[in-house]
Image (tube, rainbow, N blue to C red):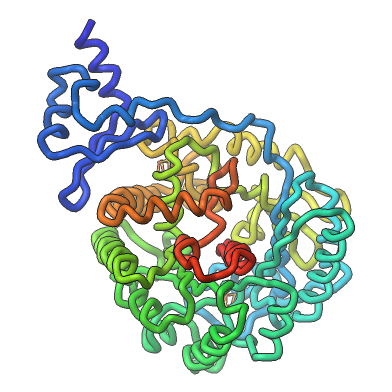
Length: 477
Ligand code: SF4
Ligand code: SF4
């Protein structure tokens, strides 16, 4: 009987070691505990009841219930692809320089306004978000500003909140434009891959000149304005820059922004810049070095946010299952210049992700597989130890790499898992992170557990609450 009980407990437990620390993690409930070396080995040998292992009790506490499966199924994040044109020629561009397999074109202001109306009519949520994307959205600034004004006006009339976000390469972020975006409360994601050599190698202008100097200047100006707190600097790493740690360290040292996102390239496996399994050791080492830098900065009182680390840290402190991290096709819908609806900006042009158009609205039959996955998770995740917390990876990656929503992109899984392990270690190394998360939880999405406020801003006690609220909106898409 005792043996049976031990074995049952062991099935639910994942034992982990991370950089010399020891953990037990309950794969069903997402509860976990750090153990000392001796207890961890005793647990591994399974000779006694798990309750007898010092420090293990939290792992068997019951988590709060998951939200009802019917909640959160209406769209609340609209991605407006206002410009299918771009002023850069990035070597790793997965958007075909904004064309997504079509031709260069722009969205009219009328279509942008209609798309905003679609969001307000399709959604029952009190908090909505509109994100401007491209190509380069600032090449169609008037459509951005007029539809943003329309969204703010409707929100005020209908007593809803709407946050405005714009993803840009930064080339057209002149002070005048920054001021106009600032006045409307926009948050920004600006692309910058790292030092000049690294950035310019991948992100040239059409004539071959590098764009680093232009973008660094605009970021410095933005940093001196209130909008600076709402800027996320986003970098991309490829096969050529798999050892990406020095590039992120550069961004941290330059202090363009405290909010950094640094993510793998999104390309078909045949592309020479796409990540391969052979690149994993370099990528994992870069994350390890970054975890040490992250903790050092917290210790020294100048923390920064790296969104994927912050998200894993928050999930581990919340320690409760979440349904899905990726809201594509459910909470999120993208609109093209023609008014076609796609599950998200990255899936534009993929037949499986076409979900209707502004004329006829969402095609619920085409949307059903996306909703089903959101409700029930991915079959391919069923045996993963991290399934309760992870939320199942990116839908568009699943389609691109595995031709369907059922199975996740396994290379991405290895990165997700590695970041969660490091997040455990960071929480042990710097316990104050827990306090930051607790302060942050009021700003998390209760369903998916999305982090809405960068952790560093919770520590900035001098900043007023409203500025913190605005920093919340800088989360990158
Ligand atoms: S800025 Fe974006 S859309 Fe333009 S070329 Fe670069 S990756 Fe593509
Ligand atoms: S996406 Fe990958 S890491 Fe996440 S739960 Fe699924 S299998 Fe696990």
